[in-house]
Amino acid sequence: MEVVVLDDSAAVASLAADTIEDVVRRRAAANTAAVLGLATGSTPLATYEELSRRTRDDRGPSYAGVVTFNLDEYVGLPDGHEQSYLATIRREFTDAVGVPPERVHGPDPTEETLPSAGERYEAAIEQAGGIDVQILGIGSDGHLAFNEPGSSLASLTRIKTLTATTRRDNARFFGSPDAVPRHVLTQGLGTITRAGHLLLLATGEGKADAVAAAVEGPVSATCPASVLQLHRHVSVLLDEAAASRLVRLDYYREVYADKPDWQGI
Ligand code: PGA
Image 1 (cartoon, rainbow, N blue to C red):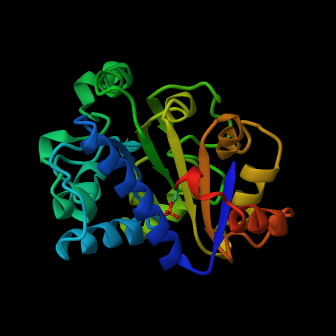
Image 2 (tube, protein in one colour):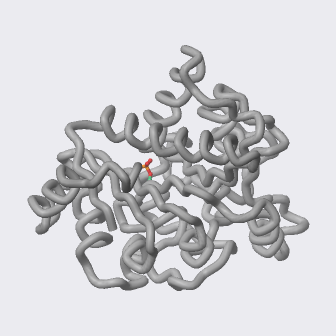
Image 3 (cartoon, protein in one colour):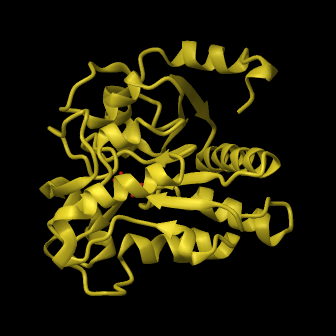
């Protein structure tokens, strides 16, 4: 795993934006569609803002041929609810950079067809050729997407029940923990680790313990984000606060400072 410790959240957003644009440009040069895995939550917002700003300033690539897949979706929200993750990702990112709406995907939470939603989502990702780069946040309880502690490391897209911790963390979007849906559809840890490149973003002191467990703890369903250790191409982009409980901090800094140019982003 590549662990990159940056000065602040703006630097994390800037490097994450560089990474996304690099994939979009490389795919366009090869006349193929870049497939981006997108995460909601607060952490990636600065990255989405940075990418939107570059597009507004005419410095960004074209997103006309890009396909996106969200990590997860709430179950049980009324149609068109502003906190649905599909609505959120369009509002916060894809509309601003110009990904055509029909190319923006999320797990389908329609009540009547829920039993097949996971399988259909897996098939859609596969049909698009798989995810090139997957943006990830991390929960304060170590969850990845909505794979809560105890999730199988091999899991595929399915229904999960949120923990009280996650409902409390997400209450800010709904007014109270009780208003946060209890059920979600989420890509599994097995789904996530099929992506070509995993880009975990974490900022702030509140993530420091979860980051340390994910990066330096044992691989265990108790910390679902520790599954990253099994992947061949992971970049963990952290600000100083989120990196503060890592034991091998000095080594990560040394490795990044000496990174050969030919390795790219
Ligand atoms: P956050 O959420 O980016 O809003 O902190 C991350 C997560 O819960 O996965």
